[in-house]
Length: 232
Image: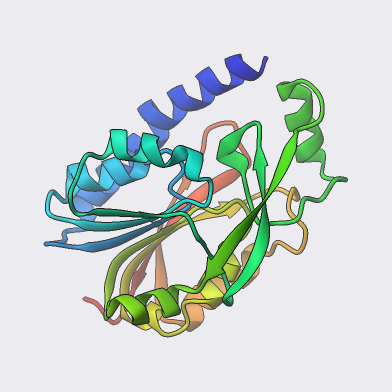
């Protein structure tokens, strides 16, 4: 059943979900030589989408599961692509990431084992979801940008399985010079201490306006696109 699930999931992602996001960006978000951060790049699908839309983009990918880096490169053979195996969070530290059999759900977030959504997932995937704990270095977006002398970002995309708010907390400076944020928002109870409201309040407090929501078909999460109101 796991493989059937992945076939359906990838079909919906490639031919429905990402296509809608691409169409929206193509008609609403016009950028020249943009700097883009893909945080939680997985296999680089949305990185490829960005390169298709913005040919001269400079893209920084963050994917702690370094076994996926070759796939990111294969999907995006570009010289203006940099890939990092560190994670981004609220402070610099070492942490443990759960690398799962279903690698698109690997995360630094703590799992709520009583979650109904988790139990349904385990049923679909055939028993308990296996976790392989791996040490990973965590830095902040502010620290990374300071070291790299990056003063502004055109798009920050964040998809880190429940750890999105922690990434935002580590971006309190650079967020003011960020044009757009694309962020995954959970509509389930799979992750402990997860708060959709905290994400929305952080972005609102930092002058961001919600432009569009994209629900992933038959799944309990969505991608939201925000624009910094100071950029008109």
